[in-house]
Image 1 (cartoon, helix red, strand yellow):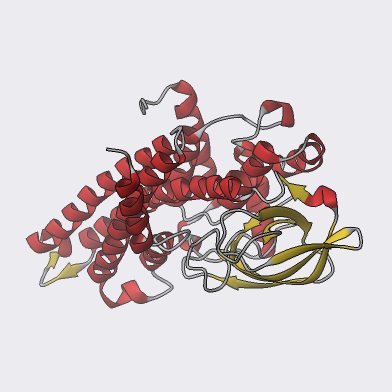
Image 2 (cartoon, rainbow, N blue to C red; image 1 turned 120 degrees about the vertical axis):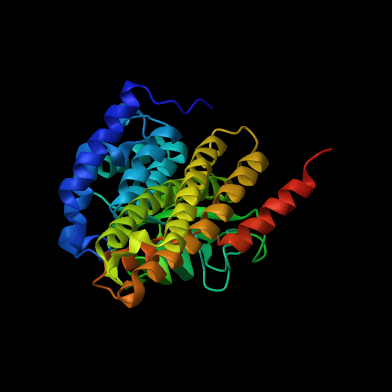
Length: 380
């Protein structure tokens, strides 16, 4: 893939950058947003067209691809935006655009694209350890409707989502790849409880409890029993965006750290004069270039024809990004001294976001194992 930027790419990146700088003052970056603030940020993303980035123009989207998503995610990561881009745009809206019926697309996509509706994908469960096929949440047909029972964990953006895309098992054993079905549920559906919480990296998520939730036949998105490939692609898009977000966040953190070393004095000289500290910052700069390359590799992976090749490249990108992001986050805290551990220090929020990115949708260990498994199964 050619990653040289054309005029359209530059225009998109500059527009997102201007919006980010205007909407995210330095002192508030990385703080969990209030509900009112989250709604305002979602409206801003909608105004930029980012909530419909992967939605076709006939549904008022932009119809753009992974390179544009990478550019947007980098700028959002630079200011620690924790808004609706990943859960609503890249996971939910893109999934409905790909697999929804014409009636479902008409019903939900315009509202998702213009920010009137927030959505989240509930695909992880307690104890599953990133295994998307391990689903205990059940859906059984009875009395003319589906009845859903079970739990979901770490639903990114699920705290204030209006529409929840819930993966439930309609057939098969607990860890079968077949038999998973995707249900679109209104957040106010009787029997559906959500427990909102903050995450380590300043995002908002929720745990879901489904107790006798009733869903009509037209709530199913995609094929009955065949949701796993759709969900996997949605998670793949999220992983690629997180790699790009890490590049933006790390770039900003290096700048913050370098400025701290230039202004903080010790033994009558700025900290930046000490060669050992210069070497630490240089190592962080090298890591940044590696993370940027991994973000490009992740975007490339989304266009791979083979699912195995896509997962191999994404796992390589996510594993290295998680390792480098964590190392640089800890280095930045150490270079700031004790103040680097406090919430008031913006560098600590960047560090937490970088560490958090390494955990979402698979940590370094899990992705290394998947990379090795795919590599071993490759022909030749």
